[in-house]
Image (cartoon, rainbow, N blue to C red; front, side):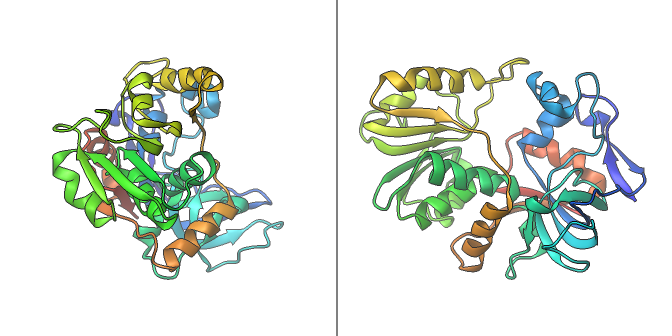
Length: 323
C-alpha cells in the first residue's frame, strides 16, 4: 500500500510517499481502507517531535515509533479482529486510527463509529479529534448552559469551527475571535458576534463572558481572566509559543495552579477519543446541528503541502487528505 512515511523528526522535508506493507491488526482492532484523513496541529507536533514531551508521550524519543502520520480518518472496514463485535467488513466508519495518511490503517474498535449518513468521506474525516476536543471543552469542562455568553478564541480553525456550532447547539450566545479574512466564515458557522483581533480587544472590559474556550490564542492568563465574569470558566485548549519544551503549555499549568484560589474556574484538558462521544457527534451531525467546514483537500502525495498550509495559518476550518 502507499503511505506517507517519516524515519526521523523534522520539517515537512522528512515526509516521503512510499510503498509499505498493510498493517496487521490485533484481536480488538479493525483494518480500514482509508478514503480520507484529517489534518490537524497534532500532525505537525508528531512530525517535528516538538515540544519534546511529545516524544516522551509514546511517539519515540529519538525517532518516530510509528512512521506513518495521521490519526483522523474515514473509510470502509476491510477486516476485523476476532474480538470485534461492533463492525463487519464493508461498514463505513470514521474516528481515530494509527497511521491515517495511508491506503489502509488499523484502529481500535472503541475509537470508531459508523460514518454519519449525511456526510461524505471527506467531511467525516474532518470530524475526529477536532470536534471531540470542541465537544469535551464546552460540555465537560466549560459546562456550557443555555443563555450563557461564550467566547471562542481561534474560532476559524478546525476545533473552533466545531466549537461555534456546538456552543450554539447548547443554547449559548457565541462571540468568535478571528482574523479579518475569516470573519465571513465564523458568521456562516453561526457566531452571534465577531471580534477581529487586529482591530478589537476582547479583554477591553466592555463585555465579560461566562465561558472562554481559548484554542489558538497567546493571551496572558491575567488578560483572559479580565474577560471572564467573576465566576466564569476558562478552558485553554491551545496556544503556541514555539518553545521546544513547553510550547505554550505553561499557560495551562499556571491556570491549574491559580484556579483553586480564585472565584473563576481556570483549566485545561487532554481530549479523550472514544466511541461514546463519536456517537454524540454523529447524532448532532445527522440532526443538522453540526456541519464540518472544509477549507480544501489534498491528495495523499501532498500531505507535506497540507501540513505546511495549516502551519502557515491559512486554514479556514478543516484541511483533509483524499486517498
